Length: 263
Image 1 (tube, rainbow, N blue to C red):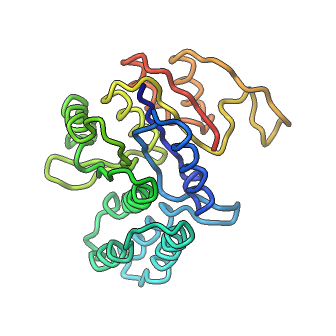
Image 2 (cartoon, one colour; image 1 turned 180 degrees about the vertical axis):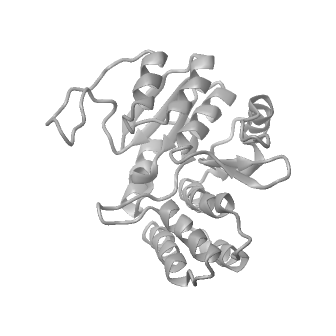
């Protein structure tokens, strides 16, 4: 049995959420492949790490100092590291990212660092191997996933190991980072599940599955117990905000059950 478990930004928001993920992974030995998003909001007024990274990029394009924004990113991830007592010198990676910043920094490269850092933190926390998405998820220059090559690369890199890999990004043929649209970590998780012929793809968020109505409008809406792949794709395209619509196709091709779950 192999389960690929993807955790969204809200599930990665702070040290408490990391601890929940650790307990989820430890509760089922078949959860051997973990895909993570960058840290999301801790509260309504908070910032997503990816938003802060895009803000840094905007500052760089206009020649505005982004030190204060970048420090917010550093503080979030260092706090998670320290509160979870994770053995990972994250300052080295943060310093390297900071030193690389310039007006020539690409938006995709910079935005991808949220997932990169989150995955390295989570891998160290779980005692899993870190597998960079750049080492397996391949795009052509039009931004299309090269599925056959990507699947083969991940199969070689995973090879029965317990791994954590970042969502949201991969690599172009010339080695540059390329990202999916926002919410694209769902797609990474689905591709990983398809590549490894997983028995189940779990998509963990802060929402308790797919509901019959918007819980912000309707109190205690009933959960939808079972959906076909076309139904799930249609609801995702309609904006249910549980799953990216492009995440359905890879698992549908392999007939892998997709379980939305709440952390």
